[in-house]
Image 1: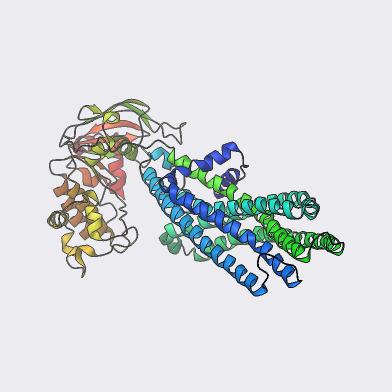
Image 2: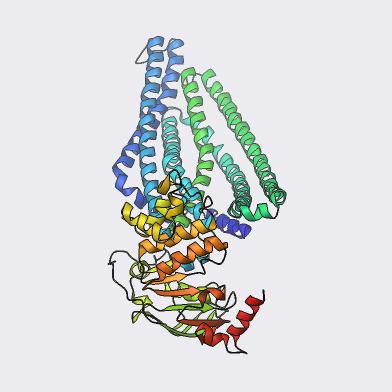
Length: 596
């Protein structure tokens, strides 16, 4: 999977610089528009900085000429030296403002990109998340945006600076020393061609190293997410070896890339200074013949060094912009996705809690060949308590996901209070449905934050009342920090029973019309189960309740049980009625569980 993802990354980054690919990068420029005047001011300082620095070689040449007895505007050697220092000082001031202004634009615009990207991500439908790994999406909001930030703060500035240096330098040399300039320009095409060939090899290997590193990072992500499983199977050495092997691949590819990079740099140094030697030789002959002064030759050599450095830098900048195009493509791909719903027309609407499934058929978008639900018909009146029973994979959780409108149904009609779920404002629908899952995953903040997640504006009294009703206040009040106690990542600092009761307190605070219980007591000890069950009984009062049943002993008091098998409802009735059917599917489930 990681390799497949890496391949996709490489394909994005291999895009050539053309009108279409630059348009992708331009799509991110809209985030810079609010700061366009700061950006333009930065470009102005960049231009001034580059042009100021280009006067340095000319004045340095005149220093040599003045020392040789030739006259210039300033005939004093000390005066020219101070002039050179002044040029450097002015250029440094311009550079400071250029760097600061570009940083100001890039930091603020990339903040806006991250906010837009995150806001868009959390509003995308479940089908989007089914097709992508968490690590890949995190990479979009971290690595890809960081790449764009480097591009807008450094790479673009360097690109403009190198182009200004190259163009202005060549124009100046053509005016002052045309013969030597033409001789120098004759060597450029060879340098450029070889730089492009080397650059292609290096970029390919660099991307390959990034892909291998991404694959190694997936190992870290999976291991840390399942650290309890790793430790329970004593798999520390296995995971360490797996990560070591992944990193060895990274090192192998990176060293190969370093070899090419070293050869490229060596060639550039040899070719660049070799070219300078050739130019100096030709210049020396012109000086000997009296066609140019020693100072002009010094100026020319310095300009040549500046121009050569610009050409060498453009190859790396080209690669950076290619990567930025790949990053912008992946960021825009998310920003252009259709969000699940708009909160603009949201209004808190009271719900009675009538639920009806009529001839519902459903297949998951990622598995279209498997029909998960087949002609499901069930009806739940307001305030009724029903249970969904059946083996794992029978379709119980899918029914809940359809009720929450995580996915559209393929056929049939699903209504809440007589209104199709697709016609409900999703926020209105979901704000009236509360869930207490079997495996509670709390957020890493405080107990207060986790309970108040259902109602962010809840008062202290409301939170404490909800905790009391959930039988959670008895342990919360014993903590030194009370409601401010940190629960740790995924709630790991709390026991299973404590996590369940915090989740129940959250559901009580939400005060939903429809309650979904994913057998919240199935993994608890007897004492915790008793406390949690008592809290659940309080929570279920006067609410439409759907229980996903794992242990059949806990659903004897419900109004009706729907028994599912392979996506179909095969039986329905009360616990007593279904248990008495000797050859019934439910009766067989009861016998199997109690036989254990």
